[in-house]
Length: 496
Image 1 (cartoon, helix red, strand yellow):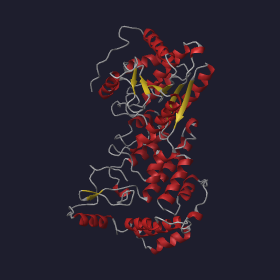
Image 2 (cartoon, one colour):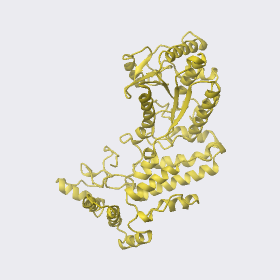
Image 3 (spheres, rainbow, N blue to C red):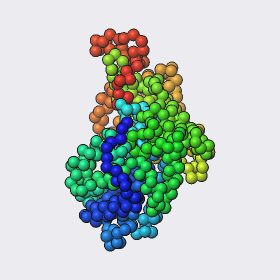
Image 4 (cartoon, one colour):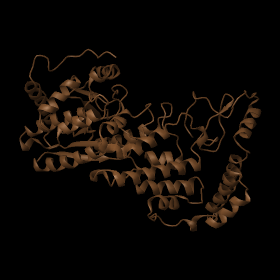
């Protein structure tokens, strides 16, 4: 892929001259108004470079002019590569201390998705299948919402915000084209409108720099908050098989040789080359092997055996004469949780001290998953506490839910036995009992019969083939030969 044409700021000039000119520009923009700044920081080379430039510029201002806040936001998806997550967390802590000591208005913020939006709550709790290009449910929930919420709050308080981003034209032709489009609409020198967030402007100080120029700056200019840039370079080199290809720490930056650096659970690429390279390049990182193996199992080519033939709402939906599969089954979701907790045990036993207390899944997420299983999906067996205790050896710290269930665990076991292995029959009876239990103490039971009817319709079929034949008959479609319950890969993976 060819590199977009650009004006090289370093051409024929020394680093000190370019940095001096740019920090002067940053100071001029900073003191021009009272609009607060929000710097996007991922811990990667580009965001580190822009933050260093902003930091140096502010240090060059008299204290009386350092009046408006500079918010540094870093979004932790909670499934970041553990090495990078640890690096960014330490950097933010160091940054906060250094800003206080240097009397700078720089305020670091670690942002995380709300619990209902986290990766594991959606995959293990609700049963969303592993993300695919046609069902990329993760990016909006994990990355975009937390940062946009923060920026909107800044805009709400101050009326406007200026976003300082490490985007560069040299990253890709698409990026260069998008930046050129926004340049035409600049309302102030160097400030472009943000197409996604009203009342926010984008400032991209290193937009014309190349990779080499970014690295030259980072290697020759000491990090002003005390984090070692040479360690950053080492981390980049360790994430590539050839030691040269850089990490990618945001979802819009193109990868180098399909290498990327972000969520360790990502199934939007064929393989996680960065984590593979880290493990193969350094024996001390072998503790991450279970994470890589779990990620590869999530990326199973055909996950239909793991998924319900009905959609999230219980309906059977067809693509042509084939069933579109829905969420992961109860058995599959329980197995994903088991594998995740086993991987967490391995990390806590074998990882270095600085990452040994890592949470691959938080207790808040476990409580939300349990709630979804028991109350939303009517899986009243409440298997999560026992599963947790069996793998971790620790008692699950949640309250008993027996008082909220239609039948106690022993009675549910009898009911399952009576169903004689018919899982559809059992799950239908279980849901009918749960619906009735939910309405039992209501003074007005409007909606009870509708919900009972939905549960019956959901469990109306003998199996997936029976559901398919019923739908085809209603539509007057002749079934094709072969395994007609497998939906075409051209359809969406959405479970809803």
